[in-house]
Image 1: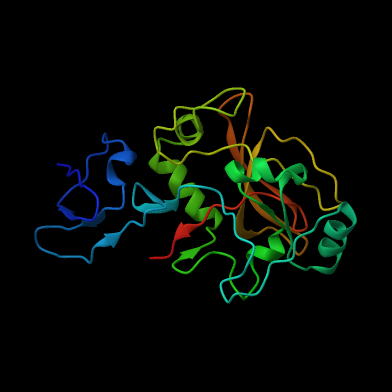
Image 2: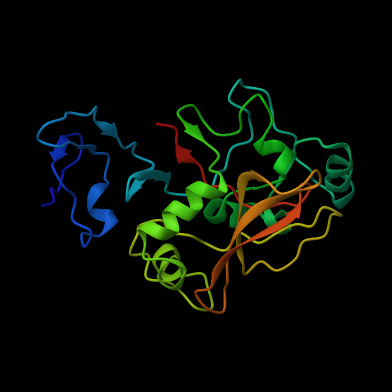
Length: 231
């Protein structure tokens, strides 16, 4: 069976319907999976979170300019500053094409060094998801052939999605480690998973269709970030 919960309530269920849209388990509710013979602690879904399968994701791309301890994340205002941060392995952020208005909907772009900085880029209670977290998300939405359209927003793409999951993915664009901005139509989101000494893994969503996949890029590249609840 399934249980719908309302805002600021605690809900329990012995099983969860696999046909119930993930959006039905949001809106600030508290939810717990519990078997008749075993109780579990409630999972509190924050106001800025969306429960998809057993995971709670932030509803928007990250848009912070300070680390968890209050230190500022350096803003790279020029291509030169971005390139220097990449070369030195220093954290940096920017808006795509230096467009603050766009940043209001798509968040900031960060290099990978900002993700792994020990001061913590994700807000308290959240963490940067690894590739395995993304793979679990895709699996919970029906696999690679179905997840793309369920993750993508209903606007902003050439081929829009259904946003059935409530994830609301938008194209954030990218910035190369060397400094220039490239296509603003793709949705590239960093994972916390390293690929090599110089590169890391990111999750990709295509703007022309609903293709999704995992690729690697230099750690100095600029992509979006989408935290997951640290439970």
